[in-house]
Length: 418
Ligand SMILES: Nc1nc2c(ncn2[C@@H]2O[C@H](COP(=O)(O)OP(=O)(O)OP(=O)(O)O)[C@@H](O)[C@H]2O)c(=O)[nH]1
Ligand SMILES: [Mg+2]
Image (cartoon, rainbow, N blue to C red):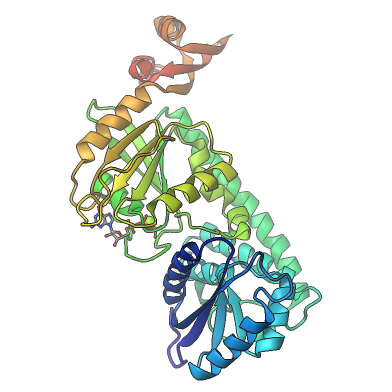
């Protein structure tokens, strides 16, 4: 994403440590990775310990002077603050420092803008970016226009972001309308899936945990899996047979990160909600990462925010082949735990068996029109499942029910019979 012909941005990272220094340092390490993914070079870091973030300038007066000196010394072109800045903080910092001021959110939005490839992804990213900008343009005419080029000015698909306030408003309205269509389309796809009765497992996890690698290994899908944050934006769904022969659908989607911007969560809700409509969550964890506990916490928090609270979870401790792999890791929130290497295939068979076992405890929703000759199947549902409704129609018996996975093959409508 580095723009040719332009100098790479040289940034100083700024964090505020409210509790212990350690957390902030780790968070800044991650911010450094984000910055580099967005094409900026980190030339320095500044951490301030405070009881609370300074409401007007994010850091205190003394730190501002220190940053001013550093900017000059390190020949930096801007700063990135580790938290989302309020419009006031952004404006004040710009006035005080007379440099380009960015925050974590802006960088993440910028990365997303570079990654979005489907029209759905592009709409969602642009919407999130414009909403972020909108709040910073209102009343603070210059806050965003001071960005110049580079990070914070890229739109999805190479498009430069429009700066004008009035245009932003009408563009947001238009994007919202487009997003509605996208949502409808997604709902239709989901309905079709649930009508096919194929259970869906959503692969979720912190960014770079190995979600796409896992889907590739499981299904031979050809998704980009790379050692960088947010390699995946758009959901991909593939089929896979379990050892018993039953088929499931696996969906890989955008990864989570600490301090995921709320504009992104809002805009990406329909993508992120893949998990909400799944029968099962595969929670992929990079168990060779020192920050594993914090990352797992962030994933559960994000799932909570999305309203995904009642799904069975299999936690997949990944990267078993790596030296730093924590073989003792536990997850008490999960229904089952498996240790694998998505890369080498180690543990994959056990994972498949575990998916089967967990699904067996689940019920699947079916909605079928049985011919009168198939009435025995309805008996079967009555016996083992949960009959929600039954309607005698001219062309057969229309049934809605929850059935256990073991019998659902037996209650499928016969081909050419319905
Ligand atoms: N050694 C090792 N590396 C792995 C394993 N699984 C994934 N990786 C590597 O980890 C990096 C991230 O993998 P991805 O599959 O792209 O991760 P992701 O969770 O899809 O990440 P995002 O889409 O960016 O959120 C890649 O470099 C993979 O090759 C594993 O089991 N062992
Ligand atoms: Mg991925």
